[in-house]
Structure formats: C-alpha cells, structure tokens
Image (cartoon, rainbow, N blue to C red; front, top):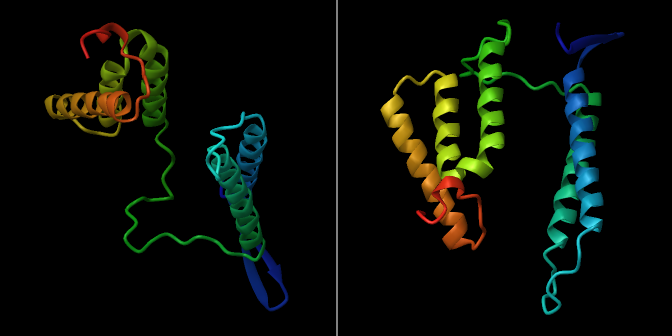
Length: 173
C-alpha cells in the first residue's frame, strides 16, 4: 500500500506523501517532550552564563520547527525523490526477517548489558547486527566488535568520566 496520494485540481496534479505527515507528527511529539523534559532539569553550574540545561531546549525547539517545516513542505506537494544511484528497489516488500533479527539483537543487548557489561554486549551487538545485515566474516566482525566496544568503554570511562556497565569484567577493565 502506497502512502503517496494524487490530488488533482484543474490544470495540476499534486502528490501528497502521507508518511511525511507521520514523520512530522513524530518530530513534533519528540521535540515537545524534549522541551517539557528540559523544564524538569535542575539548575547547573552557577558560574556559567549558558547552563547545561539550555541544550535540550535548543534541541527540542529545533525538532518542533523542523516538524512544522516538513508539514508545510508536504502540504505544498513536496515529495522526496529517490536518488539516481539508489540501489533499493522500493517495489519489493520489507525484509521482516532481518528486522526481527535486529530487534532480537537489540533486546539481547538491553537485557544483558548490566550483567555482562558493555565491553561484551557491545561486541555482541556489532556481531549480531553485522550478521543480520549479511556479513559472514565472523572472525573479523568479532575483532572489530571487541575493538569498538572496549574502545568506547574506555572512552566513556577514562575520557569522559562516565561509568557504563563493566558487568562481569568489573575489575578487569
């Protein structure tokens, strides 16, 4: 079922992509929630002219403005066109098996990250995602996944001072 409808008026045919309205509504809701959530933040550092809690206000406002601009563009009949080099056949149905595999990988990461830690589940996330998307080079995927997950763990822990779960590797990392 297509989300693009043709609206004909005398002398002109206009296309309306209903999915763009859905995206605009989603952006507006997320932006409004971000602004609302920013109102619940406590004051930051008193000696700074721009407080850290100002950033969510900016992000939320930008999201709401982008939602409005997208809705206006959609109402005017702006329909995105596929790129010339697009290699996706939009006439084919969605690959729900791949989507289901990705959902399982993400849920496993969410459920196991506190127990196993990010260094392990991050690598599992990378390997599982790569496999679901078609990679069959397990050794390379594991090596890249471990390097990325351990690197990001140390980046957050040492570089930013933010503790992310070490899990069963607590004391080793």
